[in-house]
Image 1 (spheres, one colour):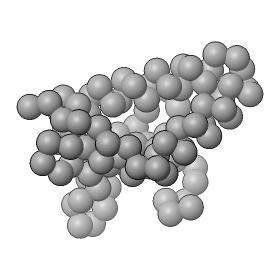
Image 2 (image 1 turned 45 degrees about the horizontal axis):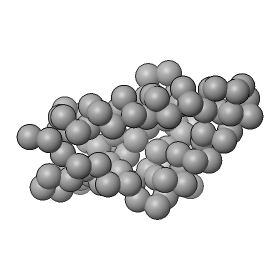
Image 3 (image 1 turned 45 degrees about the vertical axis):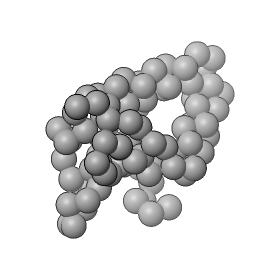
Length: 95
């Protein structure tokens, strides 16, 4: 089964903010960040249930980016993967 990725406004904001931050660090690094995100989204489209729960109610799951210190926080609902946040791992969970 193939799933559809649905990004929340917060997740979209996280992506844009992080992209600009990395581009300021080095030209092209923002694009590398987006490529890493796309790789994770591709994994979620195919098998979102593969990645573990991150909350005590077993609703939210997380997938870590390999090169960047981020976790994608998401929930599976029917044939959709709802991405709530692209969260930097050094920030507090609810910042």
